Image (cartoon, rainbow, N blue to C red; front, side):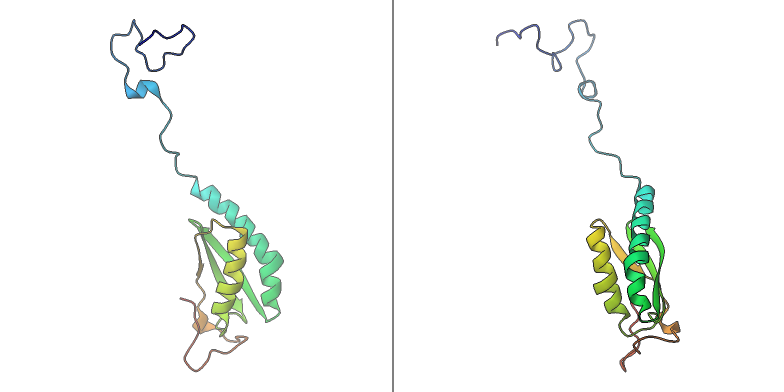
Length: 140
């Protein structure tokens, strides 16, 4: 093998004055994997976006039926909500939650992991649409 020109970096060649052979840690000190993202700051940023969507889009729509959706928290990318007023115990709560709220949030936040409803739907006293004869439509 011909000798390398003097300008060639000797990254993989041992230092002639070294007392030992190079170790893998000598060659690259960069981590092989990124550290996990700071989930708290990610959740905080997601919370702000969701709060704005609820304020500007979701709540004006459900208010037409006497309802409100409260943003409770964002935990590890999962949005936690509570439905109030005409939404609490409504026979269409599942449809509103999945086809309206969840689809709007997923469009704005593709990284959202899920949507969790913590509403006590059985405690609804004035639902916009009464549950059908098969029982309450509580989102589980």
